[in-house]
Length: 118
Picture 1 (cartoon, rainbow, N blue to C red):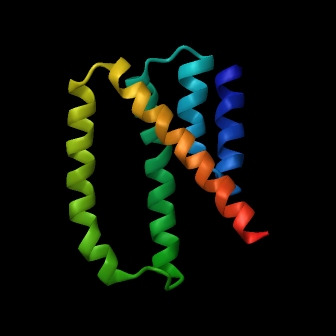
Picture 2: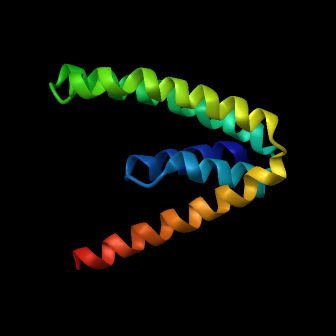
């Protein structure tokens, strides 16, 4: 039941603009004891259908910048593949520290931008 609650909560937070995938990774690794690589795979499975639907509806509503899409799709896919291969070759303990630093940086950036808006 707990995994379902975490998935629902991160889905709701993601709809509000909070990084649901990042939160899902944290919940799975810290609270559910899931291996970091397995958590990344689950996160990707959550992301792919959402991204596909987002792309479809952005295109349908005229919000897709086709030139930017053409310029970034192939390099983005190649970089994702390279990152996945590197992550598979590196020890999970090595991945945790940069991920933690990324989370701290992301949180601080969000707080900083919110303070600037006020």
